[in-house]
Amino acid sequence: MTRPAYQKFDVAVQASRIDGQGAFAAQAIPPRLKIGEIRGESISVAQARIRATRSERIMIVEVSAKTAIDFSRSADPMRYTNHSCRPNARLCIRQGRVEFYALRAIAPGEEITVDYGETHHEGRLPCRCGAPGCRGAL
Image 1: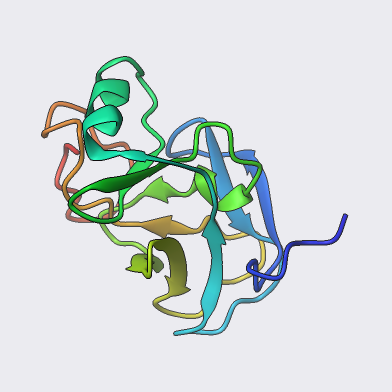
Image 2: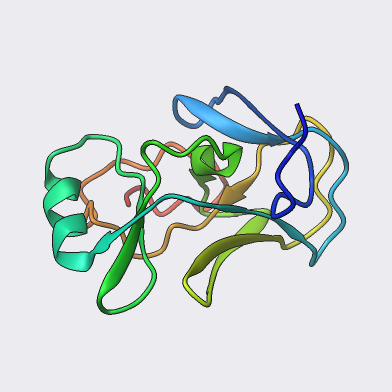
């Protein structure tokens, strides 16, 4: 299967030691380059906050004060990107798009992780990243 043009590197979805499924580099990813994006359903922030209370696994990113993207039905592999307190990538919101960039070189087979920052979990969800200096909660 051919990847969409907005996915710059091949990413595989497989079991993660952090949580459920994860996004894993299927090829070497150089530092500072765009890995790819997630596309999903555009909804209001108000609707996003309601949906976040109804799901244990939240796959929503607020992209502006009024708009959020819900990835729960997306086919993009980057939707499985897990949190780490010591991530190898960063999530960047650009022109309403949710993009991922490598912070350092990512080896084939390595799980791609980002720091979720503020979440709808409000510090109540235990962090399972296992990174040295883990904050302990999201």
